[in-house]
Image (cartoon, rainbow, N blue to C red; front, side, top):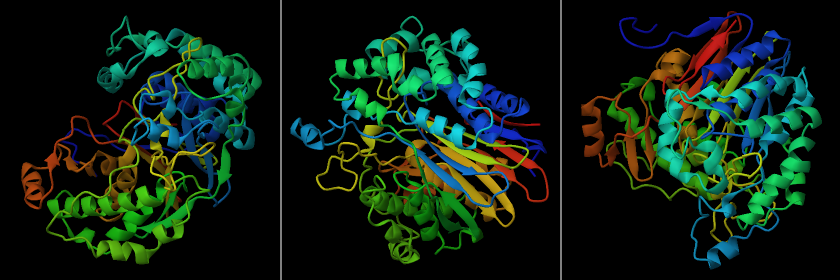
Length: 524
């Protein structure tokens, strides 16, 4: 139990249904969807789509989504890959010839086809109860009338407004300036897009006027994207991957997501008696940082589109983890591992919903960097993701950019199975996500924290040659880490964000949401 003398949040408890996400209005709309007869799938789609208006720097219809789903009455977990592919005209060789060593973040070459809308439509058709039209209809007035901008959103907006280019500057700037806290922001063009999807399903987005608008904008920017590329977008059902994390079953999305990185990191840290350490001390922070470097280096070498990831079993084996653990010096930091294949970012939304029948949805949805590529369509104002920056340009690399290929993705939903309990959860924050999954689970399993306290706890992350340590750590811990050879930094922004709902086998739903964001968990 938390200390009620100190600022903090109590876990949210309810019996019937619950939603947790990074904006209160999205959580409320998800609950409203449950209350009017929808299930967890309908509610998660509604909340996620609305977050494209509430947090437009993080996500939108031009992005990708990944889902883990535990259907009602089942012990099985399904995975849906809603990530788009590179256009048929994509060429790593052309970018190398132009002098690029990485895919340029704000260029049309970084734009992959948007997969989220197809994923939402397929998810709704296969497991929803309302249908995509009834799910989306109540969201349209919000997009038309607008909503007041929340504080964390305004903070992010001010940081990233200079990424907006051309047609994106009209709808996403307030008279040329970033939207400030409390200013009303609307996307009436996307209200029309939602009407078309509600009426026609995926065809309302991947064909007709909306598709024409997207492809015209991409072609005008010099892209090779075609209507055929867009029409070919298809979310795919797949199987999750599993591993032990502090004695519980950690469920992750398979490649092209980076969930295997979390499982490898958990296996590396099994070699150390973390439970005997101060949870907020330098020893634990150091071991996590070293395990992060090693696991992320493996990620950068191995993970790619599932059709090109040939060494997944090697990455998931305990023998591999043991060999990596042998490289860790408990008292000295190693040099940073190989640089990330993609530029680091922190721009993603996550929502989890559980309904009365205990269907559970873990859904993550992103346009990659803040405001994606910074490019948008002219008529409807659809921002394009720059997920193609997740590709490598190294010749022969498994994740090398190629036509029709999915890039390695940083966004990963998760679930945790603990005996009879199940907990869908997610940790936003781009590259931080695998490390965030492991730290969150360890906070609960090794140090006895409830989900809300586990989310509230301070974070650190070995990132880009530095060890970023939040202000929640004591100054003496930072000094100790620096003495071990880490280049310690206090990050300008908090590290990540998280939400979770624990489904107690013999009790209520227990929700948690990160105070680093604007959101909350709500139940009824």
